[in-house]
Length: 400
Image (cartoon, rainbow, N blue to C red):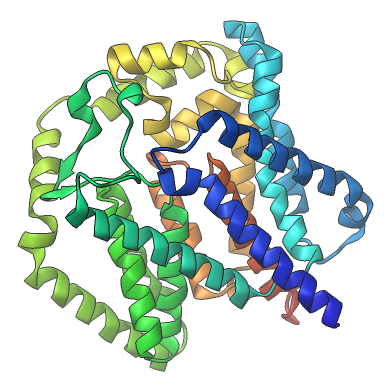
């Protein structure tokens, strides 16, 4: 028992370290992309080796409810190697190496077999959230001393694009939104059950971090999900508490709306009157998708033409979420996400509120930001699916 507890703690520490690496040390400008990429590949291969070593146990274990889905995410992504080679001549070896990053979803199995506790994972997310929000906040005052989250001169064509101002604040692009969403919803559920100053502070830090990312879609999705959470609660007493919390949140937002959202709203209005580049990108990639049945089914992979389309026309595959992933990996791969949502719906009565909110929020924003694309997002989803298992397995209704 003691060895298992120690193994659980050690696994949590390793997961925390890996999480930091997946963010490129919180998008640090001095991060060595070459060596950092090599470190990630070593982690990828280590995770795959763990998966292979435990394959017999994985197949036998009844407590793993997302075995097929997590395995399919990794293996189905490799179908795009075939499609990409046949359509665009993508080098198969490069595509295969790039696909190793999908192995991060196998952390789901590592968490399960080391029996990491839910509260340990929540603490990891909270610490990450505190660090990220602190960076986003402090750098608003220390600029130009801002080593985290700014593009380098090599990443942009126009030097003016390095700094982006939104709502009077500097926008720092730190890869982190899934960590922040997890923490915000976790402590929102805590508050709905019992008002505690610690939970309120943790929730506030997460919401502040989400706001300081200055992504309109993310802010809107978070607020909508919090509102919907009221209708996901059956307990009348808890529902009243959540209504009160929501009323407080809305009141604060209304009072300070000019400070918090004025420029974002104005920006949205201006964009609505112009040809929205995201809409044009969506049409462009949909045309590419349906022009070839092989690409539609298997995916087109990361063709070398992607940077050209982005730089020349502003058509970035990452800007069109679900459609972009459909272009890259095809219908077969995308079907796995639908399967995950269906299974989450099937077990909805057994899952905690914050996990339901995470599923909802990432689904709402998937039209622009697909739920899992990068290492840190696969890591978060591995954690979320594992927590689903924890709650399903401890319920007597799990087989019904």
